[in-house]
Image (cartoon, rainbow, N blue to C red; front, side, top):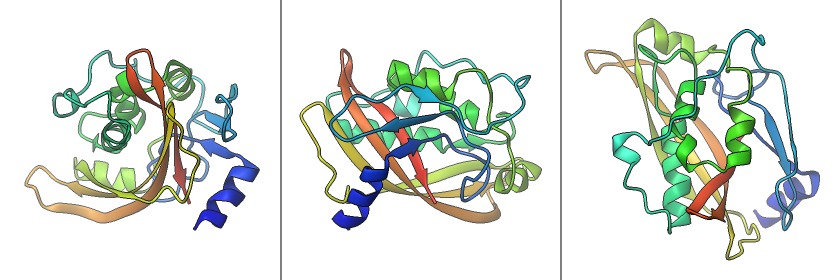
Length: 202
């Protein structure tokens, strides 16, 4: 497992947002490269939606069920951001970017600017199936080993398995559940731990 991560670190990781597809391909948020032991590099953009589709405004407060997260606990911050990021209400959200915006208070300033810059994500794939049933999409977030990533007192690495299931207004399941692996980096900021990278692994 450590060898697998070492190979990925050597090549550099691209932190991206989520799309409506089980495995993100072209609908990705702006990307951010990082190297272990260094500060996150400047952001670049990958393929997103048309420039005319503006992203939602970053939230200034967290959803009620996430507001009490302990900012002194890196694991709690990482799992909370992951849960909020993948909790979608297709009856009111226009794309996965709305959920990203809700996680904004727990994102580093640079990462927040990267994923909520000038373009919104395009809803597609499984999102459209869930949206046809006005589904609320709830994630189950399970922590795994970080595969030997080099944790430090000011930076922590996490890997989560996220399983999303959509439920219609009558609480019956809509479509299939979707599972994905998510890699998260947290850094210690002035207000406590915050997420500086989030990447979906194919």
